[in-house]
Amino acid sequence: MDSLTHIYFAERLLNATGKDISAAVCSLFPQIDREPAYFHRMYGHPYPQVAALAEIGTYVYANDAIAGGHEGEYAWTRFHEERDRMVRFVDEYEDATGQSLEPFDPDSTSVVIAYASHTYQDIFNNPMQGFLPYSVYPCGKWELWSSLDPIHFRTTLYQPENIAAFRQEFFTDPVWDVSLEPSALVKAMVERTAVASLVQLPRAVVEDTYASLGLEQPDSRELAEATEFLIAHEEILARLMRKYSGEAAPVPVGVGPKVSAEYPVGS
Image (cartoon, rainbow, N blue to C red; front, top):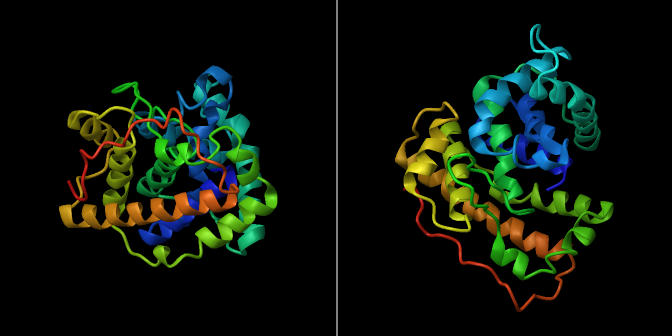
């Protein structure tokens, strides 16, 4: 998804969990790894990086400054360089929706929800090594991409009129009329990312990854509800991606693996 859509997605999840919507901008925190190019989706995007980087990003965004003693450090520098860009996307979101994301003073759980939402949602866009360093295998929506033109679908989807219509239809769907427990939502996102892995991930990898986020273990019923919501969201998202990328012809060769079924609802 494009940057503005990441903010929309994070805001909806924060609303659904009763958390602080000012944290929606934290969905852009993973993008510090856009530079240098060899870090892209390798440094800021993996879930195990969230805890350390979220704290840095929150400080820099709130204060528009690098904390003393951290000058010249990569993460601090990149957050400061990206801050103005993040502010521009917040302004764009507020102009489009009429909803304010200020003042920025979110709690840590809200920040984690928004940050993790980017990694989870990115599996629809590109192969994502979301479990580094615990696992090097990428996660992605292989069957979806095989049903599109896997190279050119983004050209159509991200045309301004198409992505705007996509957001309008997607984020007004009744699926968003839901109430979710925060830690259950985050764990469900981690597990649904694991389901999309190129290879079946050991349970320990998924549990260690979730533990790295510093949240409590959710109740099994609440986890089941969050998982069911994400599955419904994924079905709608895939349908709309097909619709707004022009229903490109399927590619018959290299369909890719079937997704793992190791993590059923509420497991």
